[in-house]
Length: 206
Image 1 (cartoon, helix red, strand yellow):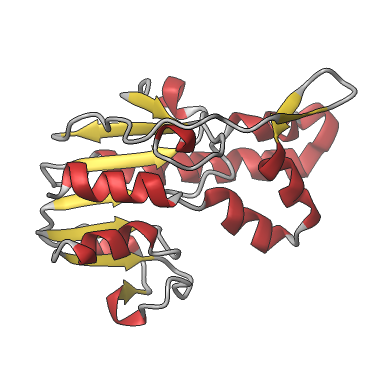
Image 2 (image 1 turned 90 degrees about the vertical axis):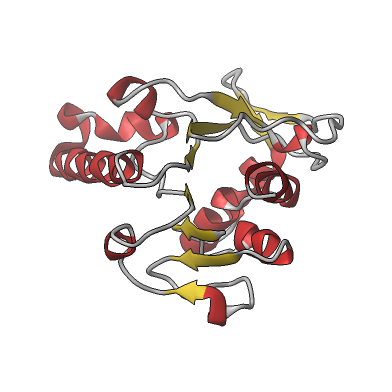
């Protein structure tokens, strides 16, 4: 199969697809960190969507789509900064929908819980790494076309969460990421866990 992994600088899924013998390519504006630049297309993904692909799995940036940043969109409180954030969100929505509307029979789009459930439609399923052998909690939404829902491969005990004085809680690994520089934090939080990457390859491309 000829497979495009859009917005995947980590190459986590690309590597698993290659292990199965597929012609898989990651694509991102950033250089890849997965160690296989020969499989990486560092360019605007819009042009690549004009080509013929058997399967497209997209990981569009979630910064302006996730619900966790909603408070920053308050124009009365944050003024011009919030206005710009609304513009960035509009662009992010259009970018997301570009994959939903692309000319490919098999498409999967991954993103955290966010506004696309109301701006477009609810996801086909929500998965967590601990359903695929990685003891981490990270709610991940999947919008899929022409593909089956991912089936859990190894359910393990989810880790404890960090409790805050406000009464809210957060997965500890996610909370600890605040200690990292902004760019490193974003990469860590957007990573695809190995178990999910393997499941995508085995269940969607085998």
